[in-house]
Image (cartoon, rainbow, N blue to C red; front, top):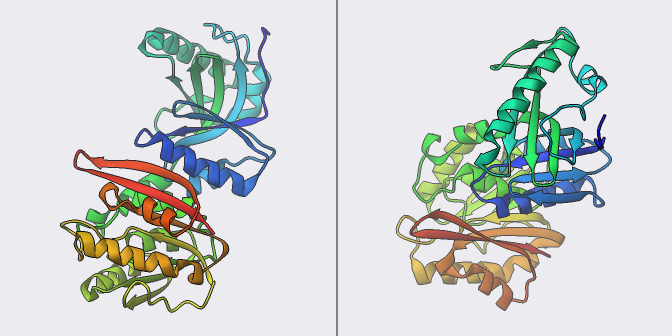
Length: 349
């Protein structure tokens, strides 16, 4: 073999909606598993060095990951041959009764299309000959992915995210109760991850509206408390949460600062305060509501807890947070459309 490198590592391919959000989400989830893990990014591709396989955990949890898996081999020379892939690698991953497919991706531009096609055909032919497995493009047992980067070519075994399909079924327009102010399920799940929501966590959404965020909280196995002043929205949240299996939820019609949770009991706060034409509050009033709520947060959340809060860029939530003396762990901008950019801030207490 040529100068091939055998790696003990993993890869993630992020969706293209917001790479910075994907990076923040992945970083927090990886740290849950291994504080010493090393993550390096090239565009939407993350390479991960850690002791245990994070693939299942990441694909079950992360909203912004399209696929993930194990790195089988790497060729630093970026050649057009496959002599850097040993037969043992293929036979160890694919049995003679299995099915497989081969795909390729390039991070180096369209000029590599011919190389991608050539490597895909070569690897498919060799895998079939070496392992005796059959090709299945629609439902393979094993998916091999060849990724071309500026620093070499990587062979991976990949699994696609099923969560993203589930999230598409939980989009606001597909819920039983709909309100135009509801957050899309993908961003709601990412915010839950940024806030560190885990099974058994006690999580508050003080501006819960129709329950979009709460649905993702309970999907993660956490206990959800939702507060909203609008009775119609509370009833809508109740309807939507009824569709979630095994949900542990408390819904309260009240002012956002009227949390029923005891002092420093909350593990996480995840919320998207109302703002704009479609919300039940308006402009300056909404800002005052959020500011009043933020003043109560230190009394509600335990030491070490996290809050992820989203707001219109006009709302300047991050400025409110800083003015109150809180430390922002990360701040991201999420473009919704040409007229709306959301600001997502995560605070560690």
